Length: 115
Length: 118
Image (cartoon, rainbow over all chains, first blue to last red; front, side, top):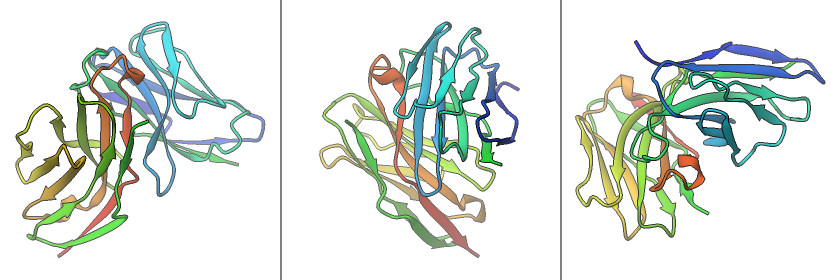
C-alpha cells in the first residue's frame, strides 16, 4: 500500500545537537510539507517543497532546515538553533503541486523531546 | 492573512446522537478549499471531508456532513449517529485556491476534542 513513512516514531535530542527526522512517500506526490504540532494548538507549517530541489520556508522555519534531493524524500533537520524543539512533527504530501483540491496525506508523526 | 478559528476546545456527545463542531475562517479570497481532519489518539491525521468554496452544495460523506456558509465564513461539521470510534481531535483547515499561493499549505484551527459517551 502507498503511504507516508516517518521515522523514528520517538526521538530525543541533547543540548546543542542537530537531529534529522525522516519522511518518505511512495505515492508519487509532487508536494511535501512539514508541520509542527504543539499541545492545544493546530498544526503550523515549517517548510514545504513543491518540486525536487526546491523548497520554501513556512510560518515557523527558524531553527529548521530541509532538503529535497529526491521526489520521495523530504527530511527535516532540527538544529541547535531551535530552542524549543519539543513537539509532534507531521509530514504530509499532496499529489499535484498546482491543484489545491488534492487533499494532503499525512504520516504517523515523530515525537521529539529534549533530554 | 488567513485564519481559522475553532471556538469549542471540547465537545461531548452521547453514542448514536448527533453533534456539530463549529469552525469559522477569515479570508479575502473567493477561491479556496476547506477540510475537516480527524486525529485519533494514534495521532494520525485522517481526512474526514472537504468542501470546494465555489460549490454551494454541502459536502457529505456517510455520517459526516458540513454546513458551509460562505458569506458568514462558517464551516461546521455534523456527525450523525455518533460512534465510539469518532472520539478524536477534529481540526478544521483552509487551503488557498491556487497552490502557488503559499505552496498550497493548510491553515489549521486549534482543534476540538470530541468525546463519545456510551
